[in-house]
Image 1 (spheres, rainbow, N blue to C red):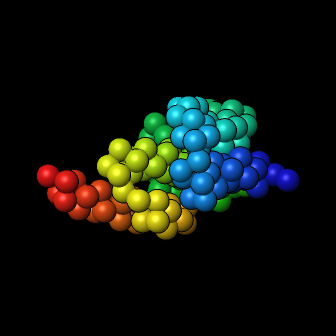
Image 2 (cartoon, rainbow, N blue to C red):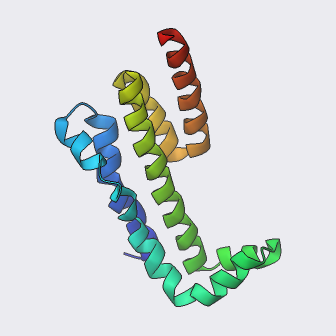
Length: 139
């Protein structure tokens, strides 16, 4: 198993809790930890540290050609993948707690979280629309 392959399995148990067991008391307790999104970042840091200087230079002076070259490497693609997995989980964690606060039912939120796994920008937009409708309905 490569570091690329490791990123999602490190996040998958948390996604399963959010989607399949949103009302289980341990889900809220586990997801309350702000450290949850850090687990998939194990892959990120393992890929980043050996290439810190190279990646850092590319980030300090972004250039499409340089980024394409770096992302075409196994470590570059793995780095971005781990980044996406961690930040998607971060967004999902926020959506989960926001839905609980706004009393948005899990049968609405769970499909949005599934969408978020695959297409996080779409999932976030859909959630924000649902959240806005809910806020207006409570006002």
